[in-house]
Length: 298
Image (cartoon, rainbow, N blue to C red; front, side, top):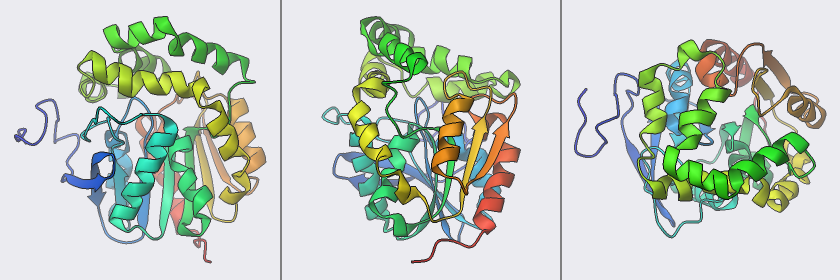
């Protein structure tokens, strides 16, 4: 399908065949996918991605579930307001507004990457509303005491990282590729859909680099979330983990195992940071099994 005046020329509807929807929240206009009917599954992406990363899972689940996948402000096809802060806390607030705007009363929650500290507050604030929970290579704690992540955070969150984000589009051009281990699934067409949403220095710095800076800069925010992690208990939960992820390591998976002892855990050898892209059929099976479990009832 050719692009319309309401969507960018780089968008390939053969890869992303979903009708556009938009919701107005206090900080801007959010684009989202809304496919299928049935119990709601809410997908929350991280960086440098957007609802495009969920396309395989939406196709797999839409026959039995209503799949809702927003683009966070500044990402994908959503508005990029200049006055928005683009920190994890800012995104979490906008996401809560989005859920309220769509009147999503009960839903399964699926999060990836920064989608953890952005999306999991929905469960911490209103645990009775989240029926099922799925975590894909994500976190919800401070990295201040993690030497490897702290070193990476200082590098990309500093002046050099800021320059590289602005000039080279570092996050989708380089970091994404390094963390994506099954390279045969990262075709040129797929990669273009992660590169193209950030065509200028402003989007690369204020949207992408802000989150790089906040890997360490929001440590107090993450620690506050982690202190309430017991609120994640009490519902069917799955942790699906690409074991070859160079950033989110097996010891991070072990931390989730400790916090969520009853969770169904699937470790995927040879899969990097993007299991929903690199091994989407396996992830779809895991989510199907999770959603078949009796939901939380309050």
